[in-house]
Amino acid sequence: MFDKLEDTLLRYEEVVRELSEPYVINDAERYQKRMKEQAELEPIVVKYKEYKQKKADMEESLAILDEETDEELKELAKEELNECRSSITEIEKELKILLLPKDPNDEKNVIVEIRAGAGGDEAALFAADLYRMYAKYAERNHWKVDMMNSNENGIGGFKEVVFMINGAGAYSKLKYESGVHRVQRIPATESGGRIHTSTSTVAIMPEVEEVEVELDMNDCKFDVFRASGNGGQCVNTTDSAVRLTHIPTGIVISCQDEKSQLKNKDKALKVLRARLYEMECAKAHDAEAEARRSQIGTGDRSEKIRTYNYPQGRVTDHRIKLTLHKLDSIIDGDMEEMIDSLIAADQAAKLANMNESE
Image (cartoon, rainbow, N blue to C red; front, top):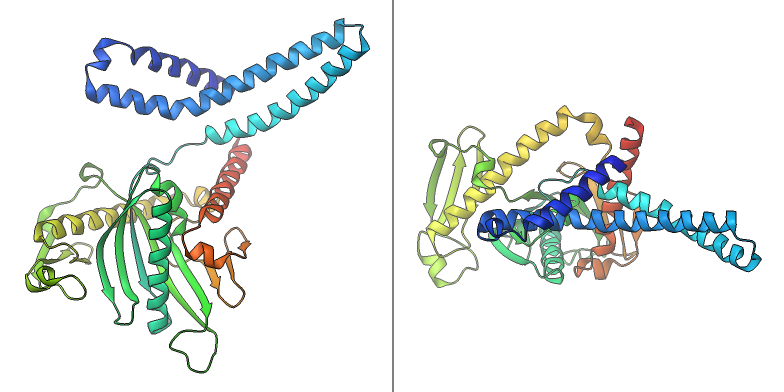
């Protein structure tokens, strides 16, 4: 680990030197790459320098204990030594986490697909609740939400809703949300006051650049139609909606939220690239079954991941066995504690797996 940290420190210093060179400053693309690399390396370097300082302080305290005869100074040195040892243990844990392999998708925007599952109208209403939860969470993080397609059920719910969240690090935070979300509550449509259980599925996919997925446009069939639902006069009276069919996989995507047919086509292609990328990732995960088991689930749409129990005011994540009695605030977008716990659990699992393989 420490060889890797020394290499990281040397690379960081090299990048900092390059950023002051005219040949880098005058090359916009190269300058941006070096700035990004510096930002990625800096947290590791700062923590490693803190580690080295604590090691030096510890050596100094040991020297005082060996050489000093003044009992008061020796007592102070003992306290300093204990503090340094405790700090070093914590810093080593933090450094191991910082050195974990980075998910190349972490900084990307995400495409979110929410579909009503079992439960009819109540499942559609729950899908709308989940959409608002993620939209409000995005707002808290100053991210932009861009609607791509929606299919309403007429009473305020969504049979399906697809949207993009644009923001640095969006995927790193939301990638654990894929799976089946379950709600237990008395539906607004229930006259007898009985608690019902309904589900909605969530899929989180990173936005994929054109170069990352090989897409033959000859495999794509586009149909245009008149949009329906709440879209305004221009949307509903022109053939601006687009239906994209990917012939080899049978994937069908509809986009109708833009007035422009061209913009809807572009959005449909973004969703298609993300789905094809997700399919490739699923194949890779299946091929790396052991690594897959060592991580928190981040993509299986059939996995029941969370229950929202309204009578008890609780939200339970079944993967990490975490229950929070703050359902109202979570549904209102206050998801940070839940997401941080998932990230910490995933990091702990990866560290354990790393230690086993060493």
